[in-house]
Image 1 (cartoon, rainbow, N blue to C red):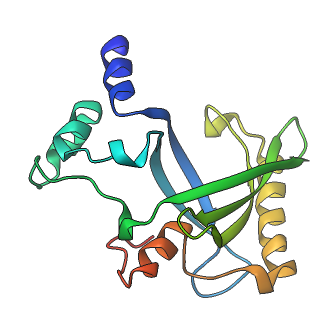
Image 2 (cartoon, rainbow, N blue to C red):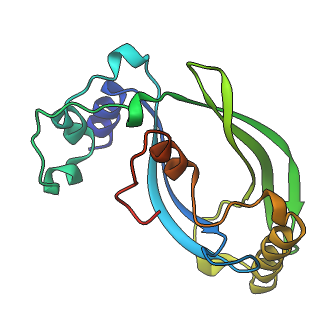
Length: 178
């Protein structure tokens, strides 16, 4: 099974798949957070080769078969917009008991016009099981996140995500709440 999945995923150019839990500021104000979960894949292939049918993606992601769509429909870029993410690792944070998080600054750029769209400061901690996290370390990380919002309030855009910004560039509204 592993070899079949790896081969099929390679066919569509997927370099990395991960399940993420992300904390975002509350929509209505600073100093709190909400969580979203996503299953992301980085597809690395030239734009010319991205003209895949939904059926092509279904071979790599069988769960897509449950979506009611025409398998012959072609996958396209949102608003015909190719995003380039420039990311720099800027350090790490320690929250005690060995809990560390890498910190990054990322800028999403419009590849065609070579201009910045939005930026993000993030910190990321990886773990296998939430139960294995030290409660005091988790509390420190959450408090740091809430304090950071308050200290950098003029840099925070409430109620949006980078993906929603790309949808908005073409006047489209994201069909998803995030």
